[in-house]
Image (cartoon, rainbow over all chains, first blue to last red; front, side, top):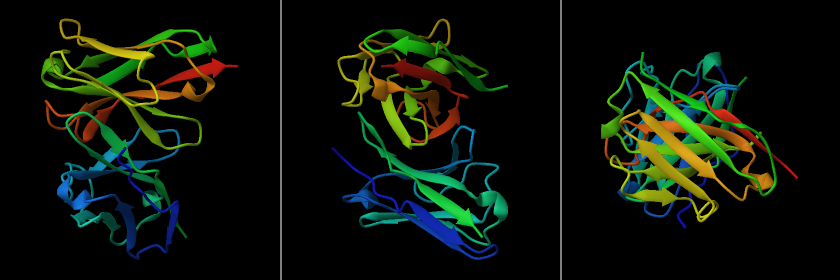
Length: 106
Length: 121
């Protein structure tokens, strides 16, 4: 079965750039998306189709996907961005999530 | 307001059954493939099952295949998940999720608040 691998944790200082990676076999050939989840809340889609932001998502969130790795980048990270982040891909009959990355802003 | 509202969660004994429902409002439910996603306490997101717009095609994670059945009623804007032979590892918050694009399983741009299922051993 297809697997997506994320680092368990990433730390960043306020105002700096955070990068969270997601690795999977030939992931660049698929659509990837990213979710933000804060404690006690439902996930929120922050990136879809590798690079697109839904309306209402700040411009500091961006994405890329090439080769075996998709990357979520948060520029000028703010304290409010501290959360768990999950990557996801899918095909015609299944959906796969990465294990999640806890982003700490300190 | 566009929303998904799950119900039906609760405490059930190992080996028991439970039926979850998700009521959709404020959207054209019938044009979206829908999914159930779960999250065990303190763990990550796990896709459980998906269903096509008409209900004619259903998809399951290996962990629930043969035990769970997904269905939908487009006349009532409702998504269901029948869960049988429940195990302790099925304990989780179960979310109903809608894809951004209609007919694909895809990226989920709308989630419910979730319903907690606890399986006691």
